[in-house]
Each structure stands twice: as C-alpha cells, then as structure tokens.
Amino acid sequence: MKPMFDEYDVVVIGAGPGGSLAARDAAKGGARVLLIEKRQEIGDPVRCAEGINAVRALEYIDIPERMVCSTIRKCGLIVPDGRRLVLESKNVNLKGYILDRKIFDRYLAEEAARAGAEILVKTTATGLIKEDGKICGVTMRHLDKTFSMRCRIVIGADGVESKVGRWAGIDTSLGLDYIESGVQYLMSGIKFDSDCIDIYMGNEVAPSGYAWVFPKGEDKANVGIGLLGSRIRDGGRPIDYLNKFVEKHFPEGKILEMNYGGIPVTNELKQLVADNIMLVGDAGRLTDPLTGGGIVNAIVSGSIAGKTAAEAIKAGDCSEKMLKKYAKEWHDVLGKFIDRDNIIKEYFVSISDEEANRIAEKLKDADFSNAMELGNLIKLVSSADKKLLLKLGANEIKHLFWSPDRTDTRKKRASFRTGTSTDSHPVQTGRLSFFYSHHPGEKWKRMTGQKKKRSDKGKKTSWPGQKGKNIRTKGKTLPG
Picture 1 (cartoon, rainbow, N blue to C red):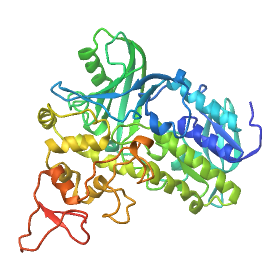
Picture 2 (picture 1 turned 135 degrees about the vertical axis):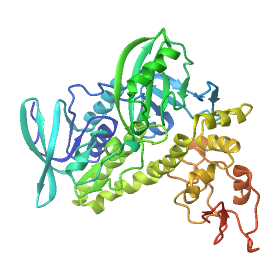
Picture 3 (picture 1 turned 60 degrees about the vertical axis):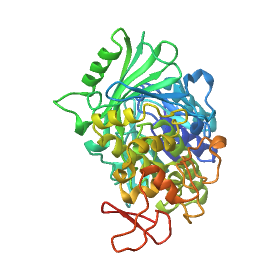
Picture 4 (picture 1 turned 135 degrees about the horizontal axis):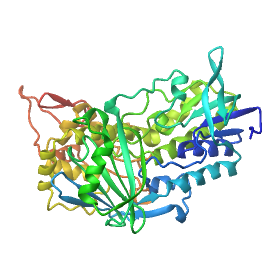
C-alpha cells in the first residue's frame, strides 16, 4: 500500500504512545500527517510493565475501561531484608492503571487516524532527506519497496534505540550508567494484592535497579526486573536475575510471555529539537529516571510536539527557534521533574542494602497512609536519614524545596508538583505537593534535625530561602 500523498506536512516515525499522540494532535491542528511503524502490528511486542499515572494521562486522553487490567491504590516497597512497607494515599483521586498495552497502543493509533493522520505499518525509516543541510523528508522502506517522502517536519518517536536524532546530528548516546536493561514475564498462578504494585529493592535482587510485580487482573501479573548494565556482577544477565527472583518468590507460577528492552534513566537530551525535527518519548530520553516509567511522559511530550508542529506549519516557520516552543512547554509541564527525579534516583541507587534495611527499621512504626505522594515519602525517609538532603547535593536542594520557576522564595510555595501551575490544589489536579511550612528554617530543621548555628566568625547564618544568606554545613553551601 502506497501513501495517499506524495508530500506531507509532518512525518512521525514510531507508533507508540508518543508517536500516536503527536500524529493525533498535529492532524487535529490541520497538518497533513503520515505516521509510520516498523512493526506489522502496533502495540506488539509489549516492552514495558504497562503501569501509568492515571491522573496525568487522563488530562490528555480518554482511557476506556476495557484497556485497564488493574486500578492501583497502593505500593509495596520490599527492602533487602524482606520487610514490606505499604505506601498509600489519602488523596482519593490519586491512582494508577495497569494497562493492556497491546490494545492501548492500537487505540491511540486509531485516535490518530480518526483525527486525519495516515498510518503505514511494516514501514521502516532508513534515513533523512537533506537539501543544503536542511531536513526536508524521510527515506523509508515498506515491505520490499524503498521510497522517499518529503515533509516539512519530522517527529522522532522511535524509542530508546532511536536513529532519527543521530541522523539529524543530535547526540542521543547513552552510557551504561544511564540505561537499564529490563526483562519481564507475564505470569499466571501467582498470589498478589490486586490493587497494589510491589517493588523489590536490593543489590542481590537488582543492582542499582529493582524488581516489580504489577497486577494484570485477578490471577496474572507482570513480573520483571530492571538493572544498570554497569552494575551487573559476575557476568550475570538480567534474565538470570529475573529467573532467580521468580524461583524464590513465585516457584509455582506459569510464564505466559516474555518481553525485554532498554530503559533510559538519565536527564532528558540537551537538544530535543533542531530545524524541522523534534524528538519525543524515549527517543528524547524523557523516561522518568527514578521509576523507569515512560508511557505518560511519551503521551505528554507527543501531544505537545504535535500541537507545536501544527502551529509551525500554519506559521510557515519550522525553524529550531519555533520548535523550541515544544521543548519549553515540555520542560514546564514535566521535564523539570526528570531533573529532580534523577537526583533522587542517584541517592537511592547509592545506598547499600544494609543502609536500606536500617532506614526501614527506623520507619517500622511510621505512618505510610499518605506516602504514595513522592514529597511525603521523601519526608519520611529523611526522618530516618537525617543527612538525606545533603547527600542529594547542596546545589540541588532547591529542586526539593522550591518550584524551579519560582520568582520570590518568600512568596512561592515550596512544591513537589508534577504539573505547570504552582497554585493548583493537589486534590483537584492530581499533582503531588511537597510539604510546606511558612518559615523555610522550620522546614529545613524538620527535615534534617539540625539546629540553626552561627558561623565560626560569629556572623549570623540563615536558613535556605532567606535572601542573600547561606548556611554552610560540612563544607557545602546551601543556596539561598
């Protein structure tokens, strides 16, 4: 089957959630869109644990009930010594979904088609067409035929192994410290809580990563593991770690399916756009580095990129400057929290099994009834590890206490939001608020257990957030 037109406004490469949302919203904006997918069937094979933050996703798409295998209200954290801490939320609107990705991805592609996008499966992008250094199309192979398709904008949504960015001259390389290898079984005949995901921590389980159990109905679950390639010991492979985990915890379980793939766990690319091109989802390294979750981030980035593309086509301006509107809006909505979560991730992967057990022991009587919200969880952990914020790094303290777009530290609320507004109520929007006190010194003292001190020279010091002042602790300056 040949494309309907000889030229398109936008060609989207990759029909995952990011690509389909980009195609949908570009087409809705009036652009002529072609969406291509290298596989013969959209949504297969599955390459993730299929969990999403439902509150955030529902801001961009409707999710029919038939695609939801489980609704998640709790999270179990199992530390190396086997202790299980169950995190819950008092916010009734905060929930997650475990999806059936095979039908979910196909549904998103159908949404793109309904909006007017044309779709070609079994079609592989083989390169970019350039004239005078400017991208003006894509070369592709469909079945046994190779052809060129001219366009004004290319959107790369071709996943963690993305070639589109490299073809455009964008550095998309990942070191072993910044990509996790994941492998997963779909299993039946195992026991679990149907409304709770379980996360298993520990270097014996998954070096610098974790194992997971995500329910998919009453008697099936995704059981998987993700670990940093740079931390694998004794020549072990991710599948070896998973088999060891399954033999210990689910020896009677039956394996129905196996999936595997790479997971970026780093900050987003420094460059998400160039003239006539944008990168979304895993292709732009937009996965959450703390959880490894990428579905919602792909949906959000794809939607923003699609809308930006339509605006650029209407304006007759597909320059990098114009397309940077996508990168800026992405950063305002979710991107800044990738930076924050990468800082937190580095803390969690650095602690030893013994330290994790010690923290869990200190928290054995803690109240986890509202710990599903990240800010509250950090607050609890810091009560057991008084130096947590110092370990995260003095220069990054402001990422924890204040919204990155604050203009006045004494007027803006401290936030741990996952949204754009600093004034929205978390119960209304599903955004996650960090704990707050009117005096930043009280907040710091409550987190660290430290008391306000005078400097060696007898000069007064102040708490972080008091303008023009600094407090020095063990050689680190906390920004004010």
